[in-house]
Length: 241
Image 1 (tube, rainbow, N blue to C red):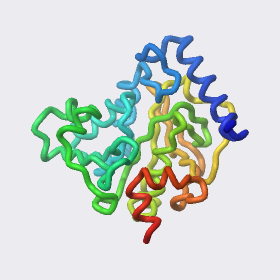
Image 2 (cartoon, one colour):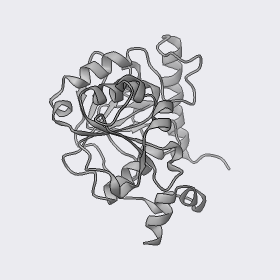
Image 3 (tube, rainbow, N blue to C red):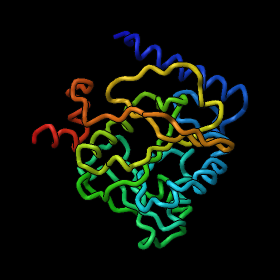
Image 4 (spheres, rainbow, N blue to C red):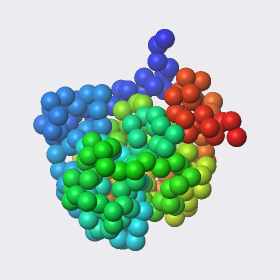
C-alpha cells in the first residue's frame, strides 16, 4: 500500500535532514538513513541541557534509548535522577526499564547504555512509574514551533500517550529533544493529533524555546491498527478497560 500524503511529506523532511547530516559528516554511524541520528556533538548538547533550570529541578526523567541521548541519560544518573527508558517496541507487560541511581552497582555512564540497561535494570508497568519531570526525545527533524518527527515507528508518541493517560505527564512536565543544528529545520513539519511536540530544542550551541507545542491528550486509537495494539501489551490492556 502506498504511503498517504502526510507520511510522504514527513519522509521527505527526514530524507532532507539525513542527507544534510551525511554531507556534513555530522554523525557517527556509516549510514544515518532510517535512524535517529547519533550526531557528533551529542555530549555538548547534553552538557548544555544540564545547565538549564528545568534540568536542575527535575528528579524523574524518561528518556529514549537512542545513542544520541546516551550522554543525557548518563548525566541524569550522575546527578542522582531516576531514569525510565522504554523496552524495545514496548513489547512486554512491564514496558519500561527503571534506572535508579541509588541501586546501581556499575558506573552510571555504563548503566545508561541501552544494552546494559536491558541486562541490569528491572522493568516496571506503566502505573508503577513516578510522575515525570522531564521527557527526553530523540528526533530526526524538529522545527522552532516544537513540531518533531522521529524515524517513523511512532513508539515515542505511543509512550507519551500511555503516560499521559496514566497521569504521569502533567502540565509541569517539560519535553526536550537534543539534536544537531542541522536537524533544526525551517521546513514545516506535518503533524497529526497523536504527534508529540517539544518545549525545548537543545543543540550543542543553542537552546530554543518552542511556543505552545502540541500535546496529545491520550491514545489516538483511530491511528493504531489492531496488529499494533496487540503487539503492545500496555495498549491492549488499556483498550480492554
